[in-house]
Length: 186
Image (cartoon, rainbow, N blue to C red; front, top):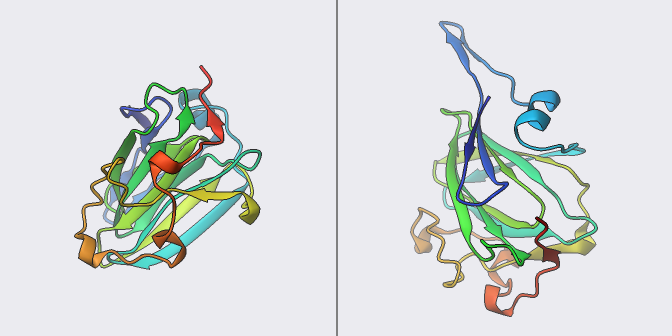
């Protein structure tokens, strides 16, 4: 696998080695040893999957400590824009975001460490999205930021009129009103 660094330390794009022939393709979507050597030591405990139609936007979500989660995500069908926002107080990139397009065609994955808000928008007619998480889901520790906060200035690559949100995602706090539970560690 090839590791592509982003503008935020710790957030990486992973490009697997894909073997294609007339039968289709094969690739290793996760190998613990190689992930630890090239990205970081993380032990994943939960896999999730969602299916969404064009315009669905899920985010910007995180879990507060001690239930914080790192995520390794990929789009197995369709195409999404995936976004990570640095919410670690004291970080040189606090409040900044990085984004990448993930699709069934490129098989890329996106690693988001703990201390980031995460979201994605569906750019294709339909998308199946998978998450590997290094901590269990804990509903009592849910946190989120408003997806269209002007201070975050995220281009979700879909017109705002086409955005489909859950009722909960319509009412999250703005970044300026947010007190982060995360602290940047060097």
